[in-house]
Image (cartoon, rainbow over all chains, first blue to last red; front, top):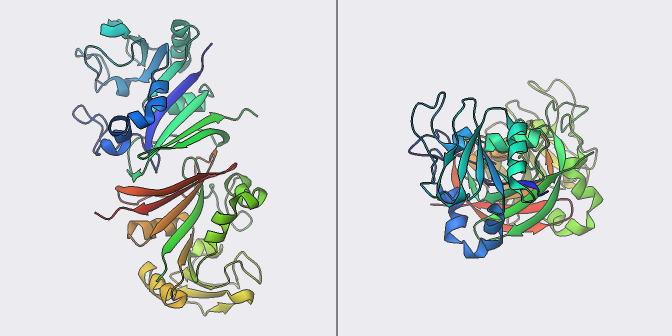
Length: 199
Length: 199
């Protein structure tokens, strides 16, 4: 079986989004290049980290990462990523509201899971087979997996900025030691990989 | 003139103390070795960073770092560090309550500043001459200097743990880009130095 990992770009103060996330500003009121510029402006330099992000057989994400619809599914929404999303594998969206699967181009199918993170993980691992499972975000979803001890590898991509508000990594995760697996310094980002320490 | 710098050990989630700071637990309810073990258990490996911490001609600290006394100075308190404190230079303690200077052994004299951070900085720079000024902490004091744009170099010593509560670096500091000056990876800590980006 593969590992369960999460990649998340954060500011120096740990925010993965700015304040006021909404449909026309999925990352809130920030200059998104502060957090994600490294992925685009310096893609070659960060090829290994970018390849690792997509090295998964299934993906899990929170509903707010999937889209801006809240409550009942009262409109047709197919994710932020267009007709051929970058996942190319089954994506399990955490929600409290049932929804039929949505099949996209390129191998991505959105499944909607109402049974919580353990149920989503079980379904994702079944779908992934021997491949890894990616917890794609947002921060709140990653924190749920961290708090439950279900994440094998957290890959923080720390960018040199202060955001001051938004969704923060590690919020409501119980105090614990971590193991720092690796650090790699690139021009626009510091890649820091952590695992939990089982005591 | 030297630079104004601050060294502060923080958890992966940015806390420089745990919750419930008090006289018999200056760092609150945490295992302090999580934050500061690198300074003691691996001092040789981190000699350059440790030497840089003490490379100052004057020091500024918040009153809560100086001691547990709150409100009026209603008891004799001479810092946490014994009769020969590790500063060996004039230490300017931020407080709202006047107090005569306290001269200790080894070159440390505690001065009490009631005029705020700019007044403290002016006095510290006068005392330091061409040497650096150290903003010793705690996090709230460092954040005040950061927010006012008065810090030349912030040296975060990031340790692999989650604390979940306490005093956090960057709290209430306005959103801004930073410049990451250097990163050095040691066995128990990642040293990350930032400066402000003036726009």
